[in-house]
Length: 275
Image 1 (cartoon, rainbow, N blue to C red):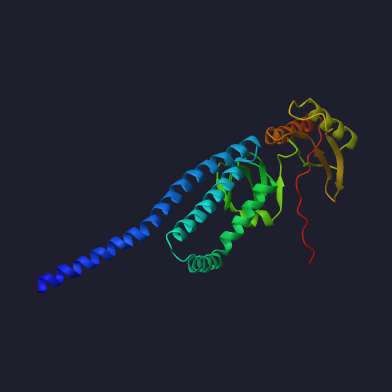
Image 2 (cartoon, one colour):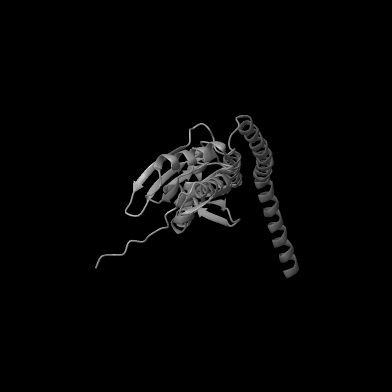
């Protein structure tokens, strides 16, 4: 009798399972169909958007970022559609995702600030990869603009990562936009120096140097007459690539020319504090 009872119970369970399977199988098939078609459509849309941005000559960093954002947004929508087709209640699921997103956002305020800063830098382009900039107390060449940080390479080959939040909210000096730079050099000369002669020597040195641009015109002027020296301000222009070598050469050539002309370079004198 017990064996017949077990067989009867198993038969009922099996019938219930088959009935549930028959009732639920259309939802599973349609959900899987939507999933596969959706994944294919997402890949197609992502490639199409990348091609459009490439034709529009958008910044590569911005193009990749926007394509990634679009990819994950579409995947999220597809996932919600998939579970909804299976019969899962999505309202509570979306509420849970919203609460989790809020908690993550509050815990990552600094990262979100850097993310927003990276977006501003990518969109408004205060600098590009390859530009030489000064920001947050450092000078370097922009190697990479990431979403959260910007990577700089300094003159002594150090790699510096600056958070984009600080970078976008601070002062940025871009030395590369104009394509050329002006040097502000200074010589302190003895009061026995003939100022006109000294200026002629400096002008001749600048005009004969191949890396000094003729336009804008390089200038030399008296900046100050202190208690101990005449201060000459020397302002030559050069391209960004030649700037460092040009500054060094002008200082060296002016020193040699002053020595040949008998002009004395006044050493720096620190004024003693009055008691």
